[in-house]
Image (tube, rainbow, N blue to C red; front, side, top):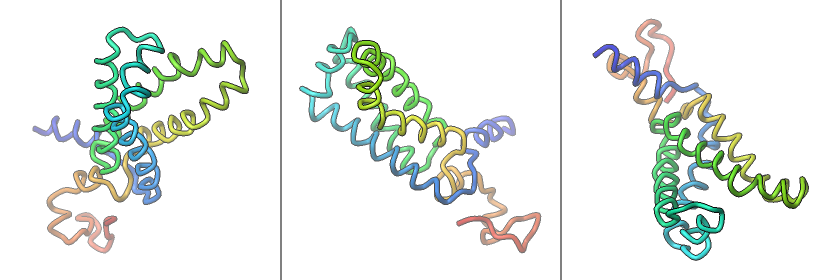
Length: 167
């Protein structure tokens, strides 16, 4: 039992930075939006797009990716298992780089590549930031980390009763 809580602690461990809520909202809303669009705008972002960039079984990959974008985006917004949720999102960004962006660099040059990759680059950096620092102060992860003793003490640190834990 102690091992399981140790693993859970490693997964939900986060810094006490209140500014990470903005990073979570940016990343989460973008991926939720992209995931929904894969279902609703099938002609542009659905299976035809995946077929155009060379994926076999494009229908499967479109809905598979859309589902992960939607679910992981929601987890990131809530700050629930933030670090774990960023792994599939980072994988999606890396695959998108190699399948859709790198060919632009090779075929059209750096300036065209810089134009199409600028937002993806910024989003990838934000995902890496969440992977390193976790969900931050206003996340479900931080609430999971709090022990029942700390909750019973009204949010005070059990070792130092004068120190309040972040809300």
